[in-house]
Amino acid sequence: MARGRKDPLRPRALRPRPLVDALVRHRVRFIIIGGVAERLLGSPRTTDDFDICPETSRANLERLAAMLNEIDAIWRPEGMEQGFPPVEPWTSRSFASHTSLSLLTEFGSFDIWIRPDGSDGYDDLIRRAVDVEIGEASVKAIHLEDSIRIKRATGGAKYLGQLPLLREVQEERRRSGLD
Picture (cartoon, rainbow, N blue to C red):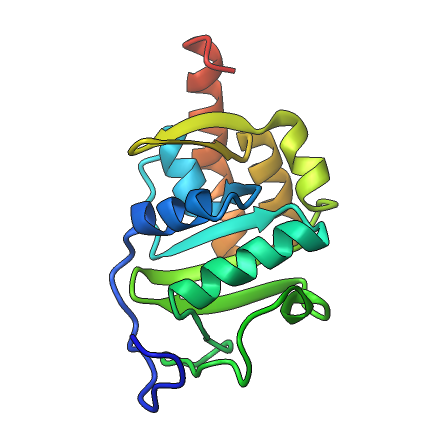
């Protein structure tokens, strides 16, 4: 894709591995959250977007911005199936006034949560984060207890309805000695 293309990306099927590869290549410190993290930890639930919570130092946000520029990520405002390119290239300032960003990429929907509901962001969530492997990359995924806390704080039928399954997965992980 070329920067500044006039036709917005259409929604694409989610392919998390290329997103993880780009994050790792740019040395972004992040935690995988949401449905992909839950799936990595044993949930059978599927999702159509990839959610992360980045560490918010300026240097890390600059690395994240460079990654977004490399993959030509575009804005996907709530309710829009298609997005539009940012006016200027991504920089650490792109994140300043947002608690979350919904983006489209050629690898699918990509959501960045600066401070997920019910948490204080990366520094809070990294404390219990779980090591996971995605392809050749070793990365961090949110602990199920923290995922439950975020869904409870977010509320709404969609998220609250996922809690029983997450509690079952968490109990299975405990019985298996994984937690």
